[in-house]
Image (cartoon, rainbow, N blue to C red; front, side):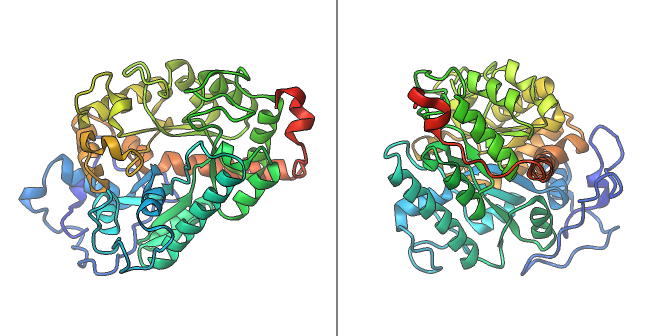
Length: 412
């Protein structure tokens, strides 16, 4: 970046900067189309940019945000159906006022990777939910094709690094919803072949094989078929998203899985009592699993009152998760364009606002290493670990042909 001096890349606590040798994936991002030439390494930092925001932007230049949840695909579907051709009914290239996400603001926010949510409503279910999810997958692929200079499809961790180094935003498909696979491992595998890399075991209602946090419990966690879904996801290398699940399902899944879990859109229940927030007993299990808890910016998850949340509230949740789970198990899952009814109360108005949060954490004394993990490194590591487990499992386990009828019997 043209306005950043190396001095601003130092850890605010005084620790040395992370070296390339310590992080083999760390490479300077390639120049973005239309970007100003980079300054010489010893160029001066303009006085107006000194301080935490400048440091935040410097960090994000090398360790951009990988955000775990953005609802733009569904928001565009509601507005335009499947017509994503540039210049039709929205303009993501030059700024789109009807949503909180577009390419200029993603650039301004330092976003280098985005999980595009494939969430569909819990009703209808069955074939209708499957069709809606396939259409969402198709829509994301169409978005990537329509914006090749800015977006790049990412199917693995190496794709994420390549996209960053080419100055593009790595676009990952997920999370899809558990009810959309219609209790079929064949559909799960088909989703994976289409590029889906994470699946939420439940949404706001139970699936026939897993309990949701916002429904009457029936399975006490996972059924035997639910355990088989987890094992098959391990074989495929898909991240298991526990964001909507009950605490029993979280614990049960952590007992079964060999891969890191993924909570793409949540917060700390100790600080705010939202039923979908994560209790400390689960956060404390993440170091043993390698999973990542991605803190949302959605106001109802951040405070117990109805007042607007603040950037400080997000930072409070991140502080808590770091304390309980450790700095290697935190990430960001803002949830932009997923909750239009409460968007006006969000502490961060749109995807351009990530530097403000990083600046707040710098003010609180977060180290460069912890911040680089929060934004980029922790999610990349979890995805690499899932891929490693998949290679190991595929050597000894064939695709599962189990059915819910055979494993769960009358439960289903």
